Amino acid sequence: MHRHALLGALPPLILLILSVECMKFDPERIAARLRIDEKWDQLDAFQSVKSRRGRQIQPKEISIQVTAPLFSSRLFDYGASAGDEELPQALDVGKKLDLVHPLQFFGSDYKTIYVLSNGAVGFEASSRSYKSGILPGSTRFLAPFWNRNDLRNGGKVYYREVTKGRVLERGQSEIRYQYDKNVKVKSALIITWDKMQPLNTAALPEENTNTFQAAIFITANGTFANFIYSNIGWTQGAEVCVWTSYN
Image (tube, rainbow, N blue to C red):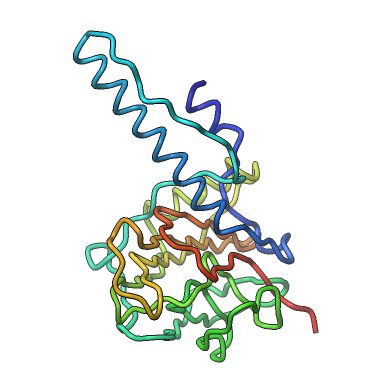
């Protein structure tokens, strides 16, 4: 089986916000998808070594099962070198961010968002408080991986708004590929939760932490959100959802 044939059947997790009321994903399936990619990388490395040595080697047997409708894309650049700002190293923190272009979310325009340490983007100041089992619920969220992350224990949350350059060009290409739409991306929000640690535990080794990203593209045709998962090492209590309630 060729890797490209497997991944070709899995659409990217890029969402048109105007067309989704509530889309939930199983965090365990996201972690499983990343484990599949890791096994493919191991197989690719083995084939490369085999080719260089020029002799027959019995490969280690691997078992691959497709369990999630997504593939892991490469993260956008992030961190201080990318011009990001950073959340304080605390528990249940959120940063208010005023936008250059309003974000359209289920019929409403928002000039202000809240970047949350607990794996989400909120639209209300009250969204900073963590509650489990609230998705779906009455709070409006973009939640790539809603969970209680303890930044005091390690990890960082980076964010920035982008109004020009390669990030917008990549966003336009991904939207065109997924939706067959020619759009003009006016701005983008890149939010990265890097090496997240859980609450009430000793610090986990880096390979067991969570790293994921939300790339939110603001266009004249609506708002598109791309959730990108680089590593998912723990999933206890996690929820993944795009949600708004209609009161």
